[in-house]
Structures are given as structure tokens and as C-alpha cells.
Image 1 (cartoon, one colour):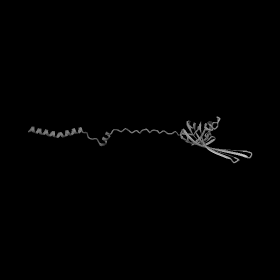
Image 2 (tube, helix red, strand yellow; image 1 turned 30 degrees about the vertical axis):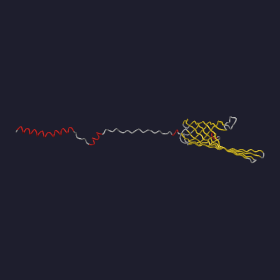
Image 3 (cartoon, one colour; image 1 turned 180 degrees about the horizontal axis):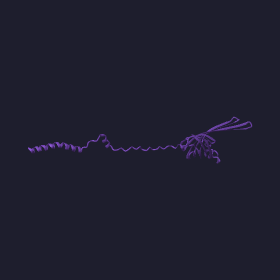
Length: 228
């Protein structure tokens, strides 16, 4: 009896200790879960601070070296023969195109006794030229260019005997020039041009036997005006 009672007491002790040991092993194998906020913070890697890309500096146009785009000037001699009134527009910074006009009218009367004769003529000229100003320093520039001048001429003559005659015609001649130009580059200002020119076409053969033949006439030009 005593031995049976000892076996019963040992079995009861093992039965009571087995759940405690199992609970202890389970606690060691599975740690308690961390709070939800801390778990998210631990799982997410530290984000590197964002760096803004450096802004690219946009090139700014140097307005202090930009020629004034419009010019109005009066030219003596030059492509208009005696004078011309002109407007010029810079189509690009280094190239300008001008259009002008001039008007010349002449007349004469000759008398001999009871008879007289008179004649008159007029000439309209429309010079169209292009000027290159790529060689410059600030407002000082070398001007190189050329173009064509369109002409419209009329003439009439009469005498005291009642006879008369008249006529008109359209023509053209070329021109080439090289000279100095003062052209404002910072807004509006004074415009000045001076240089040498060659007129090319019929009637400019002053050094040959036939003055009406095709030739080249050395000429010049000077102009004053304003650019804006």
C-alpha cells in the first residue's frame, strides 16, 4: 500500500508540473509582440532626406548689346542719287533692310528772238538695300551691303511753234557700299552713317566712250537719323 501511494503522489506531481513547463517553453520561443507603432517604425528603413535638384539658370539676353531694331534717316547722295528718305528694319541683330524714296524734278527754258523751247524731267527713285553689321563693338560698326534702286522717270519738251513730246520709263541700277555706322544698342538714339559706294548699271560708264553703256560709278553716302 505504501508503494502504491508513493506512485500516486509522483504521478500527481508530474501532472501538475507539465503545463507549467510547457508554458515556460512557449514563452521562451515566442516573445510578446511589440506595439503596432514601434513595429512599423522598426520595419520601415530610415528615409534619406530629399534633396531638391539645383535649378538651371536660364540664359538671359544681353540687351545692352542688342542693336535698336528700327531706324529712320535722311541720306545724302547714296543709293537715291542726290538724296533719299529711308526706313530700315533689323530683320536679325546683324542684318538690316532699308526701303527709301527720293524725288528730283528739273526744268529749263531757252528763248531766241520770237521762239522759245522748254523741257522738264522728273525722277522717282526707290532704293532697297541690305546692310550687314556683324563686325561691331558696342554701337560702332562696320557696314557692308548693297542692293538695287528702282527708278521711274518722265520727261517732256515743247516749243513756241506748237510741237511737243513726252515720255516715261522704268529702270533700275545696283549699288554696293562699305562704311562706318554709329548705331545705338541700348534703346533709342542717334544714328550716323558715312562711307563709299559704287553705282552699277546703264548710264554709269563715265570713263568710257559711250556714257549710256553699262558701267560702275564711284560714289559716296552720308546719313543722319534716329534708331529706336
